[in-house]
Length: 415
Image (tube, rainbow, N blue to C red; front, side, top):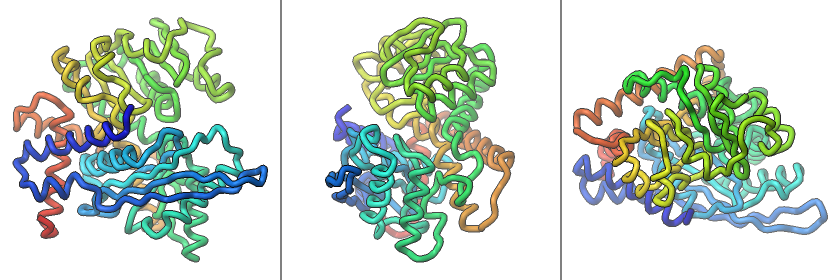
């Protein structure tokens, strides 16, 4: 997907929320333009003695509500426009669950599969040296995203604290438990999606137990969400990674698929069901479809193939506006990404709070707080949707989120 188009679509969603609320042009400008955008050039020594140069970014969309918050992705197709788009979406994802954050996002254009572990560590540390002036627990707080993980966060916080010469555990979330991570963080995005989808299903009269579910994407979030839904009695009829899809109307053995994926880095040797393409998964009939891969998955070219009652978005920007219009005519309900994937940043906030207090919660406490946050967010959107007679859940969600951010800007006297 063209990343400039992705950015323009993100801005378009925000402007639509502004129009619903009747906001003035000054507020609309402040709420759509990023406050700060940093592009960096990162030289890294390779194992063979050569030096490779990588391009990286960190964007702060706004700090009207609080410090920036958002992941850092290592991906070969990352661009500045993608980072701006994701930072914009993060602002409103944070607002949906009432977190005291603005949106932030980072990226490095790199194929991590081409790097050794030592090269990956050098790149991680070099990125922090490059963006060090603009991050901090009261400035902008990174976290894992696509192709980054707790180990990378551990290298990064070690580099940051080495530069600072004192501990600042709240500067990065998604860390290993041994250095201040939170229980429940590794599964938070998927768990939050389950909580909000359960709330929606209660409203829509859908039973998750026995429901047929398709999961597009079988990375960290996708594999975990498939397991969590299966544990609730759902029948996972289709999954896929970037190259291989599996279809089995009797239900896929998710623990077996996870084991094979971990060992072989692929689903290709999964022994049951029918092999299909990742694109084929989009057209499998199901009750709930979970997009857990990259942005632009469901678009004008394939939206008519979708055969589901409910889409609960786990990835960022998986459905284009053109696809939204097509699916709306088919009466498909879409729980948008800023709601469906907000569990990760919510537990990141819990980690940040625990770091600052030096007091850590049990897994039960984390789950209780996460469930309440996600269900409350869903109910707030439902109430706004009904009060304003809005048809689409995405539009209602952005209305709620934009209202919160705009109020913070107004109270600060910015507009």
